[in-house]
Length: 97
Image (cartoon, rainbow, N blue to C red):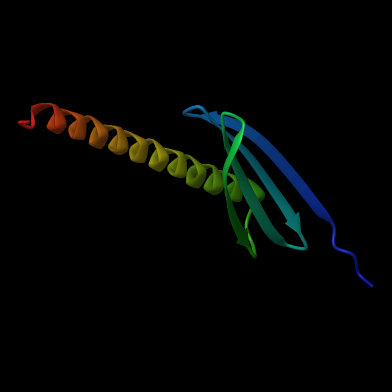
C-alpha cells in the first residue's frame, strides 16, 4: 500500500483588527487551504479552498486575499449598519410630535 506524504504550512496575520490563521497542506499532489478568522478572540468564520495542482504559496496568497476581502465586507457592513442607525436617530429627532 502506498502512503501519501503531506507537507503543511501555517501563517498568522492581522488585518483590520481580525486575526487570520492560514493553513495550507499538500497531500498527494493536492492542495488544501483553510483560513480561520477571529475577532476579539471570537471565531468569526472559516474559508477553505482546494486545488488539484499548483504551488502551496499560490494557494496561500489566494486564500489570504479572500480572507482580507471577507474582513473588508464585514467592515463595510458594520459601517452601513452604523450609518443607518444614525439616520434613524436623526429622523426620529426631527419628526414632529
